[in-house]
Image (cartoon, rainbow, N blue to C red; front, side, top):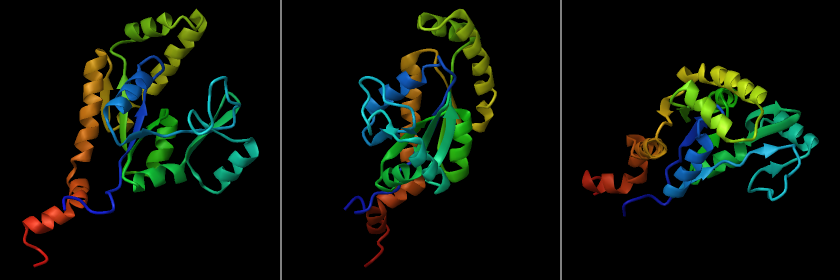
Length: 213
């Protein structure tokens, strides 16, 4: 037998980046490459948009239910953004980690600080753009924002990037496939960590060491 009946606990990955760095595209591509890697679904008090489904895009809650969960300590992190509350369910994340899944949280630096306080074993990654000029170009090419909004996003990016030293790993998204490969390697390396592999292959190790005779 090469593994135990109960899988080793999964790893929680925190991924943060300024707007325009390509975080969402990288995470979606990574999820398609790696079985056993899941994206945490956040809770929010904002109403669903057209095409969104409860439990798939978000867990949609009314403000009263959300506040009750905050008071009960059921969020790993939460924040109010433009009048709506957003948060990461502690119960949901813990359940998936205990089941052996690796879980990704796409959150900003403030949420990351809260999660690290609750789960200091989490592995955090910050995605950087290759330059300020390239970040400006990416934000402009979206064609969704006015010049004033782009300037505001650039200022916000500086604030986000100033917290890079709080993260375990930095990935520069200059060439998309290279950045994706680096993220892939990072997850695989965590899966090969001695403690996790030792639990996954305890029976094999015992047999190799001649234990239990």
